[in-house]
Length: 289
Ligand code: GUN
Image 1 (cartoon, rainbow, N blue to C red):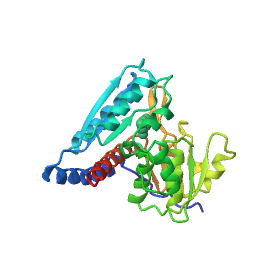
Image 2 (image 1 turned 30 degrees about the horizontal axis):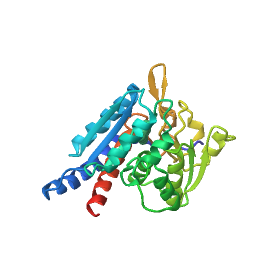
Image 3 (image 1 turned 120 degrees about the vertical axis):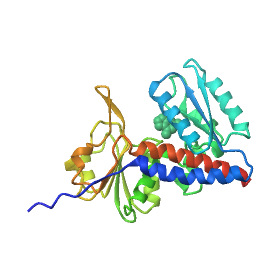
Image 4 (image 1 turned 90 degrees about the vertical axis):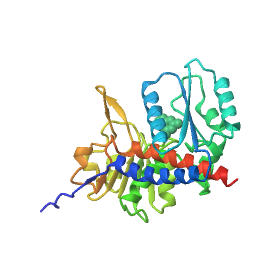
């Protein structure tokens, strides 16, 4: 007899995000009542990538809804690295700015690592500076990247046990794969970091209590890759025939996984929320001197 199907929870990332945003709004209202200025996030967009422009608008809307100030610097695709670094230097020095986010990807000719190195780590609410990445590696306090934080918050709020769990992370980017692997390991999971050269990826995933797919291969993770009761987190986004799809066959894993995040209203709203959270933390750290 085969095991009965599992009732999979399809995580409503927007509902979770709204819970967290309500908590952040309360914290900000407390500061305003005490006569302080609101926290401020500055977003920098270079070039005209429509997806990036849309993400930035979403971030600014989210700021406004919780009472956080935001500003946008939209620079042309022809901007030189020096011009961008000069702007970052100005923003680093501006005491009215708490968080700075430079939207990725950057146009060819601008080195994203040089940009990350130029940011003041205290204002690096994306957790991308070498200082903050190093602090994560060392287990010291610092800003962590927002998507990895969002993934951890989804696991926590769905009461997925991490201690001793086998976690498989697919993808080794500096913005998701590597930092989420470290956060899972720091929460006492045993982590396997997989990538395009991993042998028998399906077999590795079948062992996993937690799968985090962040590789950008449409519907890579299939039903028969998932152990019954596993938590499946889909971070990937790709375009197929003009439609956005994730790294997980969401419908396929329903009935096998304990939870799955859909590619829409899944991790995305949590990423934005953790950006707000990092910015508010940066503001409060400035207040505390
Ligand atoms: N582009 C896609 N995701 C992100 C992100 O989390 N941060 C930045 N800066 N750019 C991105």
